[in-house]
Amino acid sequence: MEELLVLLILGLLIALILGLVNPSLILFWSKKPTPLKVLGWWGLTTVIIIIVFNALKPEKTTEEIINDSKSKKEEITETVTPKDPEVEKQKTKDQLIREIESIDKGIDFSTYHYSSNVKDLQMVLVVFGVWANIILEAEQSEDTEIQTMGKFLL
Image 1 (cartoon, rainbow, N blue to C red):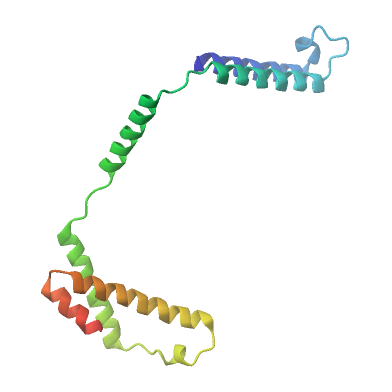
Image 2 (image 1 turned 45 degrees about the vertical axis):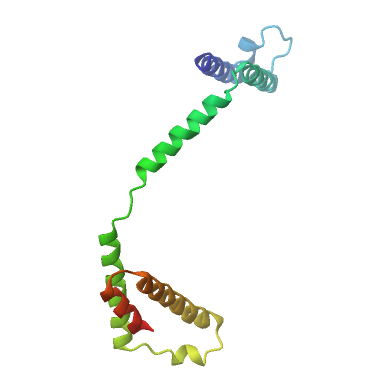
């Protein structure tokens, strides 16, 4: 059914091109064929064909819709890989080490403290928000090394 629709649309497209070049080939019944008339007939015919094919298209049953959604859900769950706890621990440790090293190097918040710029204040809030999340992750971790590094950020 879809193949027939594609063939009809393709035939209409060819007829449109021919009709725009030589309107009398397509509108042989018209006394004064013009490219504008060809375009009008083409648009009307295309709309009618699309309406008819949509009316004749079989509706999906509820079971088909449910099966489609289940198969899509299965595809999604197959592509999502579970997180490896060891990798996550190592990422947390690495992040804690980077943050502790940045503190050891010295962070000068005085430029933000007396600034009247809102963006400076937002940057400080973002940094402290990230640190808060890192500390919470460290506190909830089962690894004692991560917990001690998290306490250092406090």
